[in-house]
Image (cartoon, rainbow, N blue to C red; front, side):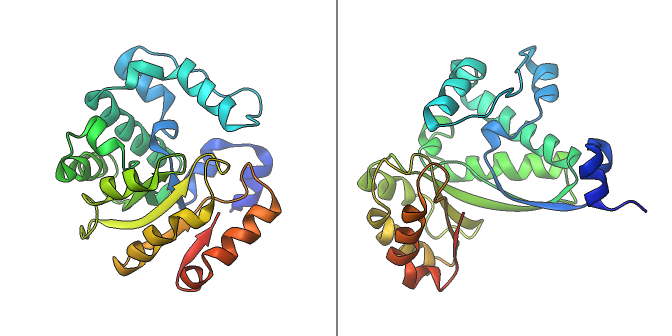
Amino acid sequence: MESFTDALKQGNLEKIGAFPKSDLHNHFVLGGSRQYLHKMTGIKIEPVKTPILSMDEMHAWNRENLGERFETSEMRKLLIRAALHQAREDGVTVLEIGEDVWGLSEYFHNDIDELIEAFTTAQREIAPDMELRLQIGLSRHCPIGYLQECLSYFWGNRAFYSIDLYGDELAQPIENFKSIYRRAKKEGLRLKAHVGEWGSAEDVRRAAEELDSIRQNGLIAR
């Protein structure tokens, strides 16, 4: 039997998809099946054809290819379903995925149960054998007070598995998020943070040092 490495070398997506795998951080808005979305909406989303070199370029691609067409509750839920379809096609058996905290009010009427149900229903109907781990997402550019207000709807809900910080690393220093991570640790969440995607090795070092006491108890620096 051919190995996963052989399938990668061949660039054979069908063979690659046949191997079970984990996806431990899926941005569902950008992680869905383009074929499924085209079938359901008639909207054709072009793939990324050249490397994206900055957050600005990523946002520009997002505006051009998704934009306001998907800025409704109904379409947001369709993007969730598209992500489950893609994950199933890719052979994912463990999927860690979730909504940004600001999305709760934007698309789910500040109803945490509606948000959870959108993910769990999609998983149950599309990929019932897949392990679903719900993640709480934090956009780094958002003010801390605003994030804390949004998080008040999430704290104490045992449906969530992890929390992650992502976005523009230059928006504000990592130190600003220490209180949120301390609370998340008390909530029993797995702790993750994106560091070094657009920044430098120094940014990674500082993040590790500033969050060291939390990192030693489960922080994953990505």
